[in-house]
Image (tube, rainbow, N blue to C red):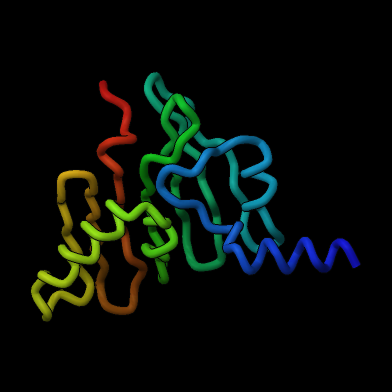
Length: 143
């Protein structure tokens, strides 16, 4: 019974989706990795660490600063979940929503947002996956 309750709590809180500002550690990797999704450490660089998440719909790269905080994402995915990546941070969400509302209506497969705290670029050909990136400028490492 306890396992069912814990699973229901995890599903209800969207624990399987990472967002800007989330902390990444060994428990995160175990939580994100499921039979259909695998998160692995893919690169350790001077200023950040990269984790790759292989999913049924595509591949995401999670960019993590030296404080173990998610500062960005890269993706090649049929259905990127930008809202989950933005998380609940009011600044990122507000800047994204404002810029998204001002975009050209005919641009269905292209998204370019560059605000004070957030950068989001996404492109895709009809029928294919989207390729994109998202960066929280205030969390990004300085080189």
